Length: 509
Image 1 (cartoon, rainbow, N blue to C red):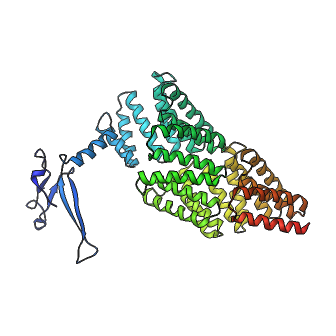
Image 2 (cartoon, rainbow, N blue to C red):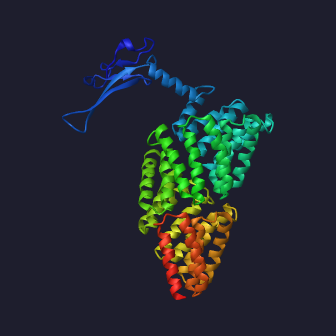
Image 3 (cartoon, rainbow, N blue to C red):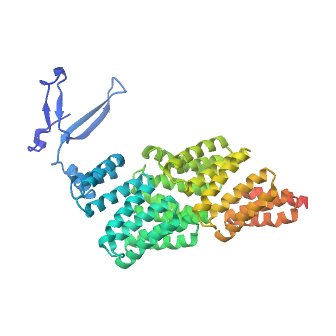
């Protein structure tokens, strides 16, 4: 450590020699004040021992221009009425949620008026939301709303962010109708109080688009996402991370609609911006890799999908707590690829890792848990363990029937998968019942060239084949082939499989 007294403010005493007062005077100890700051000059490996490193430090203080600039910026970001509130905001920003909760609970005990209590309720709502404690977050936001409504009219501009926050929590809980209700309340206020190209309006349009996407209403989702994107293109620089998020949202809708080339185009636009504007281990970049991997997975390019999923997981494991839902998404996606390439034990390992996190962090009827149970059931089905497969599929269906509208594509997946198990058990009339339920939903909710609709035709055709009704099977398989050819690369295994099935049926006829 190098200490130059001429570069230290004379108003403080940053250190003291305490060798005369130490129990071990030969160590020549120096006591530094807790707010001492050092610059790192150099770090070198010692030549005599590769496990030891020497670090050269130089003391500095508030008079250091770079340090004071950074400190002032942090102060601006954590403004509050006093030091404890600033400390609370700083704790939330750096992710020290337990300490923040302890501090805010103490501040709540000593709050003088509703204004202070409202601020604390907001911060506790934010904290619980980021920890995945959604019921608690809603509770605090509702308390905040109760205070505001005592003195403010229903269309007051300051109510909009609170409505939006409550909508966001319900969205993450899978309660989409409630989410839509609160997002629309927020949007109504903003449309009255803000100019038409204000970024906050773009945020509301994006949130509503997200809910419609989750509900499977893709044309509405695209409409709102494009409204949002139009505003952002006007109001933001071309490399702003919010533009990347907008591209990602539009890409997600195209992926859900089965338009994979469009989806890939938008996901790659998002990734390009994020790589330019964010640190390399930022969660948004991990999300980009997940999204690109998912498109390659749907296109049957499994090695590329696995490459991107593992990039995403690597970032998540470095930056997130072990029970974060985003880690569950990565584990789930890697499991999906291993399932698709037939490595079922590996698939089950990753699916169960994901499921463990979701069971801890999500409400019991959350759609993501339904997806998790569905995926585990699928692996058991492929392993020939049909009773276990049926158990998990029915768990999944039970959640989806409670949480989703009756024409949601995810319900079609559940019916389809239960039908598939009965097919393997040879119970063809039950198979037909579930496949037709699935097909009915897909005809309503998906575009006519969606691969899932093709799969539906293929599955029903397969049942008629197994029942010996070849004349009924053939037109269904031909419809499946026609859609697959329009929506998938010519090398996709689905196309070859259906062509083989058609050949076999024609021979039987």
